[in-house]
Length: 299
Image (cartoon, rainbow, N blue to C red):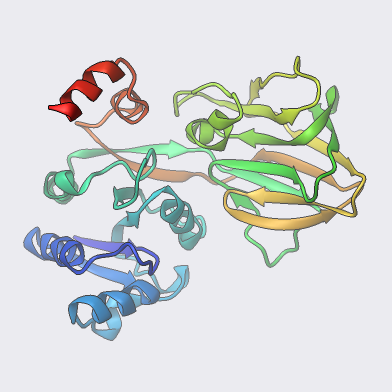
């Protein structure tokens, strides 16, 4: 079975972990391609060399024989891997070498079991929604999609005013730091930190949330994912930010931003022994008595 491996070169990579990763791939009989930037760091840290056919630089160089793309890193790396696929319907899975990891939810301790399940086909494929954004801030050469959220935010210390519409019907004008539209997959990311609800990934909805609103009665609104969410943004400064996941663009006063469900989806590998609710409970440490943890640390 052939897989593609994506990671970004970063200081947190360690030679021992990289040797373990590539050793596990070889031990389970995988052939692979790896992105050039990461391959260079692997060679530098471990001395491992790659043949030219084992490397790729863009989505067009990923072989048609690849059945799964593995992201190695944190959730930020996973979001970059989404863009690397450029809408190709290759299922993705994330191995977590970072911290929290809702998207990259396979630990290094679970690496061998996960690779065994992938090799043997013991997994399901989940379809996840992408957001598509249009407006004067982006041109045709940019990747206009977001997996987690599309965000508008102030550029300086001045508040921005965002008129918010759903399918042409006005909800409100929000004065504050900004607004965001999140997919269910992104409900545990930025949306959660601004007070949005946790939404199961198979729900068909968007979450529209204010960021630090001046009017404290402003609250997140959940709308069907068949909706188009439109923002008309005004700022006392000259510019504000539009973010698609972790990519930032500058936009000017009066810009209209339109967000809708993309025509194509992203597909994730779902292993049978890992559930969204298990991940949520463990990552959020729900039900854990902090006093008991402190007692254990003191022993």
